[in-house]
Length: 171
Image (cartoon, rainbow, N blue to C red; front, side, top):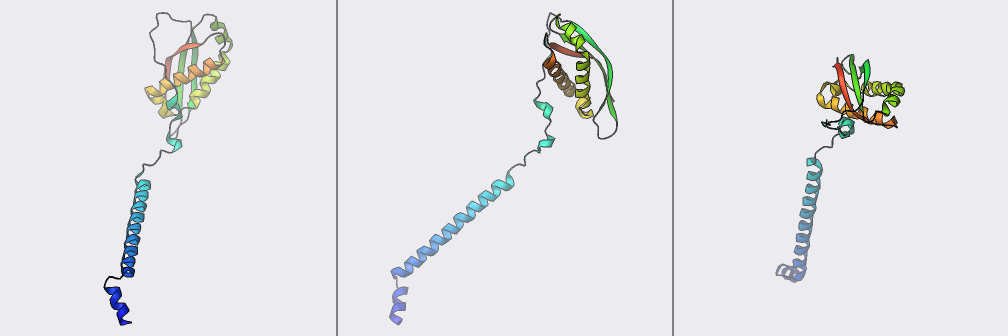
């Protein structure tokens, strides 16, 4: 028995196999630890996504630029209206009047016939805006684009070319 112990200590292949197994286990543990660290860093350092409710849906609405046409279409004035708007810090309203520029003379009669629909669409769109949206220039441009799109959706003989605010007060 004493001879068996001296043989194992002197370079027995069984002793070397045990050392290799330990080395492989240590290397595998280090690889697993590095992989776990990488995965943890990936998840903890990843930027947080912006919640859906903070994104403004009106950002994607195309805002047409005012183009200087030499030809001016027929104009139809929409009388002054007052609309309560959405506000968290009190009561706010919009007092506005606007003029529609139509692309065809034939559409003037249709616009006049559909004036209740047009006023309803304007009141609903403006009433669903917030004070913050209508207070700046971009919000007003966005409102114009939405109004043009909405009014054009039910006109058949012509289209609204542009909308001009002749009076616009947000309070």
